[in-house]
Length: 112
Length: 116
Image 1 (spheres, rainbow over the protein chains, first blue to last red):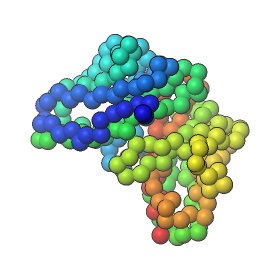
Image 2 (image 1 turned 90 degrees about the horizontal axis):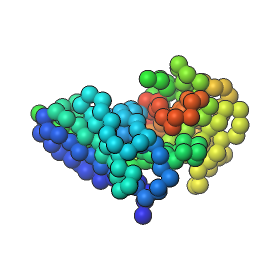
Image 3 (image 1 turned 180 degrees about the vertical axis):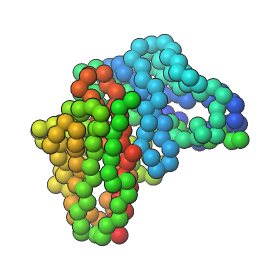
């Protein structure tokens, strides 16, 4: 079993839809949670960074962490074609040198 | 946010030659940098952790003599692919962590290596 599981997709939605991206993890030591967006042939871009359970909102993006269920989500409201990319979840444990463990990424396609 | 610059973005070389890729933190000092490799439609695979002023720590299965990493300053780490072969063709990405122990990483744009 992988430490971080993420549905690879592809996930296809119409423009304007609410998108839900999810990751589950097995290591209870993970304390920091991140979402990255990666366009084709580009490096990953940090979207959201959280370290506590609950919700964090930034514009159209909301990151949700449920440590009791070992489950994190990224919601995208009013999705746009420009949101089409691969979304990677990543997490790290305190005191582990901040090594990141990545999910496999979910490919999202937002159709006009 | 912090900026990490990676150069070159694309490189094509002949088999048997060596290629150097640079990773720079532009507006912060990076005590630790990470090098990843990404195959098409796959997630990032950590190759090694580079600490300023000390030897890099390589992940299992990564040849240290093949992938030479140097972190000579707090703003620069280099990855040299020695005696490159076509199977080394890949997308290489670096990331840097600042001196604050927050866990955030900032990524370079990546370097696409094609070995003919």
